[in-house]
Length: 553
Ligand code: GLY
Image (cartoon, rainbow, N blue to C red):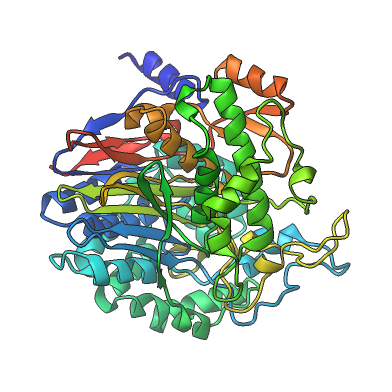
């Protein structure tokens, strides 16, 4: 391929006009991620006899170096683990928490209005990072025992210390975020005006974690330096907040869809609840026999109803008692299905009186791992915005998140209909802000057959939904299921987003049914794995965002 043709292909892919398949059969296991170096590091762990959890931990630390816009140790996320031998599935919640000094009104201005500058652009927005605790918990409880944390962090330390060329995603994304980063001298020094990303402070921080385990991050010099930098920048995080951080192992959210078990993330992510609610609604239709526009309409109507519930009910489960069993029950889905008109869009207000819309960050990253024994890991983690707050804490190399913007900054304020909204997701001390991250594993007869998830803020859950529907209802091979153009609707705003590659008849069919359709560039990336009928493990990298696949051999 000539350079011109390659460049043309890359740009067409990036604007969603073509989606070449990047699927590969991998008998000895596979890692599918958004960055190639990290994927290869994970695949190397598989090749050396590590299990999927070992590989995932190595990828998680490597991406903090090689994919700094979302890979992180200064943010948080969720890891779903399925072990083939025992059939056990674990959901590790390593979401960031609000510092102990957080208050319900911390993101309001002097007039009592939500102030996005505080919740997105200031050091107040930084949540206590969870990634190091989450990775360590996963390895400790479910690793093969053949690799120590230090073994798995070692490749990341080398890459941070020796540096990597600024190319691919880093080269593409940095120009958009450089102004935010320029505000922090420690960030500018590392990321700007250079063609090589050398992160020596980060290497030293990673080395402290390799030596002392999570204590190397949450206690001692690194924690003191992090807390001092954050407070210097106007934040409220203390060393006690860092020392008190805990990842939490939860029961996965579980649903049944057409004879398959759907396992996904429970709150503090909304992902699993909303996904299961949508699938329950859709199970009442023979989606495979419908034409594409009719099917798209039903998907959109299911999305609307489940996202409306998300806005009202969900929040940190340590603080909010959401009716999860009801929201994910087949009976409730049947009552929602009965309100869907197959010929006409239901207005948002007819589903629930409209609350104020809430913006969510859209830059996160997902990777899927499966080893030859069928153990599976689905991991999504984030700094919220690309490069988070843009602030590297001086002396640590750690890019910090602005995750606390995922709280509803102004809960309890009456909306146009006099309703109060967002109570369940109000900021508060120690609270986890509600996420949309949806790492998911689908089982058939107890075995993992699909591993998927995506970045994309509020679009994440719908991206996962469509990979599942494409796979289970439309019987697409995983490469096609991932590449197929996607739709998104989130109740409010009252619009359907359709990727540029969405076929015209689907867009026209939605408009004819009364939907307002906006065309968008792809904003999700569902790096996935499936097990074919003959048992072959097939990885599918999502070429919307330079997905990368590395086989374990
Ligand atoms: N920050 C995006 C999410 O957690 O859903």
